[in-house]
Amino acid sequence: MRDNRPRSRSLEPMTKNLTVTVSSEDELERLSAHTPVPGLVLIFAERRACARVFRLQGGPIELGRTELSLSDLLDSGISRRHVRFAYDGRTWQVLDLGSRNGTYVGARRSEGETRVPSGSVVRVGGSLLLTVADIVPFEQHGLGISDGTVAGPSLRKALQAVALTQSIGLSSSLMISGESGTGKEIAAKAFHAALGKPHAPFSAVNCATIPKDLAERLLFGSCRGAFSGATDAKGHVQAAHGGTLFLDEVAELPLDVQSKLLRMLETREVLRLGATHYEQVDVRVCAATWRNLREEVGAARFREDLYFRVGQPEVRLPPLRERREEVPWHIQQLLDECSREHPVSAAVTFVEACALRGWPGNVRELRAEVRRAAAVAIARRSSVLSLDDLSATAGEPIGRAEPAANPASFPTDEVATALTAASGNVTRAARELGIHRGKVRRWLERHAVDASAFKPR
Image (cartoon, rainbow, N blue to C red; front, top):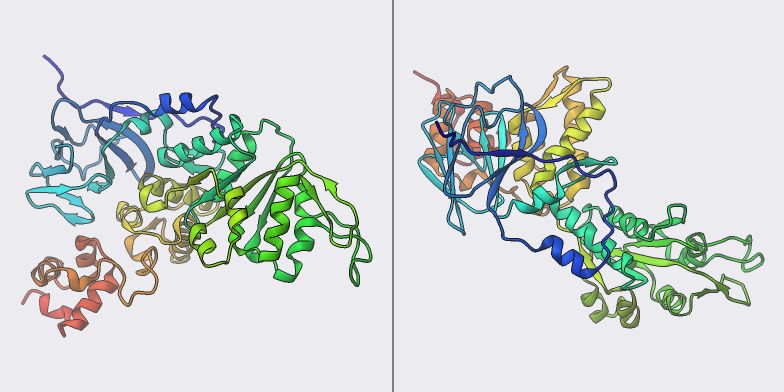
């Protein structure tokens, strides 16, 4: 009898080195050229981050307890035939097959067929799936932790572009753009590693933290007697001789220092503060910023000539909201660190909520919140992070009166139904709706309703 069950594929472990060296631009194009194949990625199961690919070829696929289990310990929360997925080239159709515990799309229980875009998070029992328009990058690049760094296909593609600019000598400089917390220093180290000199220096400077009156001295060094208390000291530029100078938040440099940086880039010479002769330096410069440098040039806050020197080529790092597949791995990495002394794991609803939020602070914000939540759970002697351990405002847009997924936006009957099913228990109702309990409480206050009104009479 023919086996028609959908085939899954566990992704191979990522290569040890995150730096990808590509011999030519044609090679990069060859690696990325393929026919897109839609599919699903299992990113969390059995309270662990994972990476298993399900290709969607030849029609819809059905997933259940057997397909979504990582071991012989089958998830009792998943029915034998649980959910069906189909893709029409634009949207996904998710259909629960009458399962006992339901299928949740975007943390809300799906009733009948639900249509969602690619990049949506679907919860089935204790597992999380991600709908993906093209599964091939996952198969090519992998997903997981390598050398202590979490990376999925989107980040690895960006790192591949970074390595390309260095390996084929497109430029002696590179601009990395992206929101705060997206991993710009990781990209800078990939640029440095592609130089092929493992012992060459890598000097990282956060320009935003340099006092403006000290910027020139710290970057270019000083000579004894240049000012009161001055000594012969190298600057960050000399420290990077033979290697890479990473200028993070380069847009924060004062204009007068920008002009000196431009001269150094063009002449490969540097003049220490108080010196009378120039020193030869050999450095590659990798700059990074979260600002729009073209707008900064237009506002006369960044030199136009320096922009054309360091602003191209440019590689953009995608924000975490475009790399949702990485979220469970960041959580897993941090909890594994905690587990050395206090074993702790994360409930699927906790991971789901993290994957659904926008995280304006990106990886930095997510990891800080997971550390805080883990500390709270450990303090109350719990071994599992629950949805209630996640702050209501964590990962939400900053500067808005109400976080995203405002409970007021939920239909009144939907909240009432959840509260009725939970017998007035706010925590259980919030879990059913896929939101924080504080949002349900604010909804009750807004509508002047007491939770006790939903208790059975």
